[in-house]
Every structure is written in C-alpha cells, then in structure tokens.
Length: 492
Image (cartoon, rainbow, N blue to C red; front, top):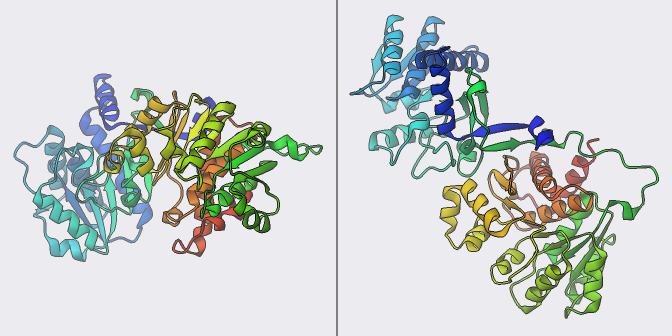
C-alpha cells in the first residue's frame, strides 16, 4: 500500500476523529471550542469562495457541537455583512462549546429563531448544522420534518461535517437525510461519506484541516480516485508481441446469455490483454466471432480434455458472466478450481461458489450486494446497512480480494481496504458488471497484483462511465464504455 498511500486519501471512523480531538486537547495546544472556531472559519471561507455575492443565508443549528459549528459560522457571516437567519430549538443541557458559540453569535447581534418551514422553503443558501456525527437512533419527528423541508426547497445546501441524518461510519440512513450540495467535513474524511446511500446526499466533499492530523491513528480505509492511474501504465516495449501482455480465458454464456461473456471478453481486450479466448456454448460462436473477430472461441458442451487445455493455456481465468446455475456451469467452475490459475469470479460463478467447495484462494470476487448477501447468508438490506463490514466478512470467509460493487465500490484483501467513489447510475444496467470482470482479468494478465487489478479496474470502469455519461446517464449501455476503457489505460 505504500505507493497507493501516496495517491489516496485516508478515511476514518467517527470515533477515531473524536479521539483525535480529545488527544489534541489533552496535548494542551487547543481547546474543544477552538476546534469549533477552526471548523466555523473553514465553513465561512468556503461560503465566501463559493457564493461571493451571497447576501442571505439560513443557518440550521442543532444541540451538539455540530450546532456550535453552525452558531460560530453564523457569527462570522454576520460580521461580514451577510443577512443571516439562524433557527434552532432550545437545548436543555447545552455543552460548554455550544454555550460559548451561542454567546459569540449573540455578541455580534445574532437573533435565534425557531424552525420555520416557510423560511426554509424560501431560502437560497442553507447551512446544515443540525446533527453532525452525533446521530444516535431514530430522528425526532421535528428533525424529520425540517430535513424534508430542506430537501424540498430549491436552496443550495452546505452540510457541516456530515449531512444530518447519516451514519458517518457506514453511509447508511434509515428514513431521511439532508441531501447536501456540498459537505465540508472536519479534521478527517469519514469513511461512510463515500459509499452506499451517502453517494446520493454527498455529491461533493471537501476536507477542512483543523489541526488533527498528528493525532489521527492509522486509517480504517482509503479512498482511491483516478489519480491512482498515474504512472501505472508504462509505454510498451517496441519489441512486444501479443503473448507479452497476458492470455485470458473468459468462461460463461449458458443458453441465452452470450452477451454477458461477449462483453466481459471485450472489456478484457480493451484493458490491454494480448490474447482472449471465450469458452462458451457452441451455439454462441457466431455472435461472438462475428461481432468481435479479435476474440478466439472454444465451444464447450462437456468439460473434456480440450477444455482443460484451453484453461491451461491462459495466464488468468474469468468465470461467471452468463454462466448460469445448471450442471454445465457447475462443472466449468470445478474445472477452473482444478487449474489453480488466478481468476476472477463474477455473477453466476459467485452464485455457485457457495455450493462448490473450491480449494483456491488466488481470486478476485466481484459481487453486487445481492450476491454478497447470498454468499454471507444474510439479506441484501443487511449488506447495505454496513458495506465495509460486509466486504470484510466476505474476504474473511472466502479469502482473496473482494470487490463489493455498488455506489462507492469497496475493495479489500486481507491487509487493505479501499473505496472508489467513481461511476454513476448509468452503470445500473445489464452487462456493466461483466465488463468490470473482464477489465480486472485483463489487468491481472498484465502482471498487476490481484489487489491492484481490482481497484484499478474499478476506477477505469467508473471513470469510463463518467466520460460516457456526458451524453446522458439514461440509456447508457455497457458497450458504450469500451472506447473510454482503452483511453484510460493509455494515459501514459
């Protein structure tokens, strides 16, 4: 991870950040209220930079230190001549920090108003300082109604630290959450902001340094972005030949599912693999060879010696796209296990994995949440409740590298966990997961480690989708990604 660390961002649990705050205070260099002031100053400067002509801001403050951040932000805005409305319900037991923040706001002429839905509906800019990372249990009816009003308004919304209502560690929310335009998170990025439901309410995240860096422990995970592609793809030798860049066998495509294996195979070629053979039902030869003649093909009715020779020829295997769950797919999966080759297992390969006692662990597993739930024997809802936990449980149970797909894909092996908040809803269409499996297999064949191939493959796949989405997310096809995959692996 040393090279990856240089190109990635550390992510933390909220408790790790709270402990860092206490350690900073115990070290004697700062008080909790001074941390509030630093956070508020960062919010004020961001508002001034993003909305230099803003003259009206509605600030919504809660009872904890997130509310204190909001009060001091409001005070700074008032001092700058901004017309500020601050709304807050009364707190019976305010913290010392909140008490000082309220005093600071009052000293500059600030007036505290009660929550008013009409004002929220009419606001142009809203600062969300309701709950922060302190959410516990269900929201009160009052807060649910306030959040609903914010989301129904046309205002530009800045959330302080995290959008109110979200679990900062998992990205999950039960009923409703502030759908912010920008989240300014303090001290360190909370890992939950980058995956699952949080991807909808955190479209943009900025980090405010409030002086906690030296007190933070080892991160719980890392964020990877397209920056990780820098320097990965070196110029090829001028004397290279097709065998220099890996040989991959793509296995799958039971009756009626030729498209899945065809898409995976082209994704593999476009990622730079030198030679790719498709092993599928004989009936599929024409559609695969006619539409992509660069692919080799081997028709398989029974797993015989010829099939084993094709598996042995490859340096990497990809199995699962369109594999089905009948005996034909079962026997091919067993054959893959006997080869002891590095492999990517996707789609129906994963659905069969729970019943096929495979001996190898030199693999990358690429489940979506439903497949992950079947592998773990839990519900899809339980997977989405804590995607980091589910990914780690899968890795502990099945070994190798796990790619838990979805909004904010999580990739982990025994030692590392990264999240790639790339891609868009256009990927929620048939065949896109097959393309990802092919990309990862192609990178493995080009001598990237399984973990490297997994996270780089996810980034390439997501970035290709983001480029394709320039023409619109609706109607995006898996095959639309192909030219951009090629583009991204040639950023030398």
